[in-house]
Length: 147
Image (cartoon, rainbow, N blue to C red):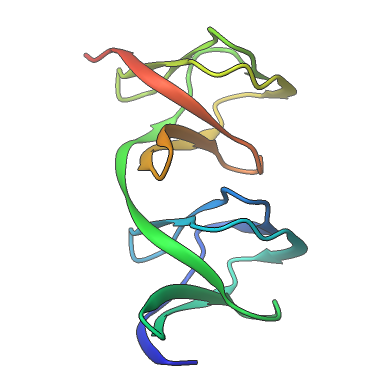
């Protein structure tokens, strides 16, 4: 599979590739799917390899056929959402235990109720996005407050 640069594990659940999937690795790095590809595959903390193949960075997830192009993204905020979390809706505010508050700016709507979900905000390929652990959807957000 080309020159392996990184071998690690996904920090938590992996539900497959959905087009803009963001994964956080146990080594602290975050990666985002760079091209559209959809495949469902559930695994808990699977081993991954990030490699350079023909000049392109790809990720292979153990048990999932093929490799998917990815880009490393920087983590802007990580922690638990302490405000009531009811899913995604344009204008929704997400307050983190770090004191940061982020607002959803896109129109994606999805209902999901959970107390203090773990989440991270990354400077993604198409803007700043929120990834909540256990939810495949990522939504574009902007920072509105910082403690």
